[in-house]
Length: 379
Image 1 (tube, rainbow, N blue to C red):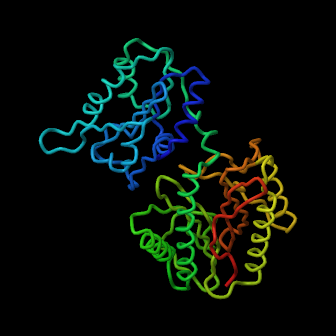
Image 2: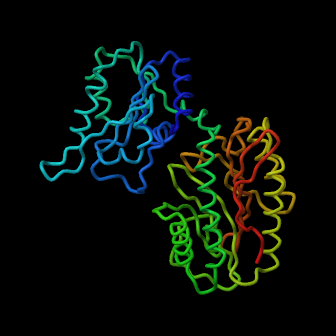
Image 3: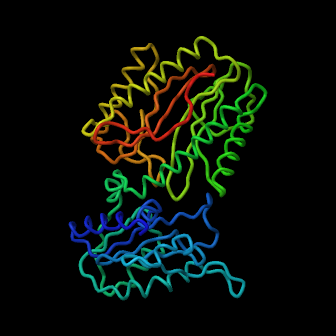
């Protein structure tokens, strides 16, 4: 059943905190609890509010715009989760999605029999929803902010999540195959990006949002950025950092490509980044602190003669592109089996060239299983 294990973990957490009812309004929480993930990059024009989940005594209710319940058809038969909708677009009357949402959600809250405080993801709760909580609950209940409560739970992936992530990583592999062919002198960054996106969506057979970077080395800020109308010249490098968003989950990966034969300096940097990535992967094991992993990879690059890169060494991935554990200098979180992390050492010479290589891996009891398969060799 879709995301049932995630809902059980959440129920156990809330019960341990004495919370019998809760309102989840963060889109990340809603995706993780229900699998609800509309394949659209822009907000729907007719939403009364983003999708939300009401929890009470072990049962969940997903509230979505009409017509979107088909995206979670599997939930219709779930014993622990229901789906209700409200009207958005209509030609019969003025569009008033906020009012329709209020009319749909109020009876659900008014039927609440649970006692005690209401857990609420306050940061993502709109004024409309706050007013509805205040007015519709049978008795005025104390609010317990639960922002971030699900973040630690999301670090350990379920089997269902791993399958979705594996499918995403396979799409980024396809994107990188297209990128290797597309990076040629005379093309622009946006031309490369367009060919990547086309290859990914053709393979998926559906719309797939794509991030992150496609930057030519002679940019002043050549670490990352959206593709622009910048022409790739002979011997230029192009950093292509790709994330796909499918089934509500993100992938990530990076490779540096070259137009023609790379220079001796580019070859040396690329090989060092490849060695640093291999070294980083060899370190991965349960119990290793994120900051220790970060420190060792940074030291590897320093000993090779390169300035410390100004970004993270890596990060987790899931219903967002950057999840815990963040592989950064401050983070005391220990790696655990079941986490999916990215590692991405690099070095950059502004306005000249740079390189970054990135792989995704599943932390296992014995080390790491690499999940990305894109070719990271020099041409």
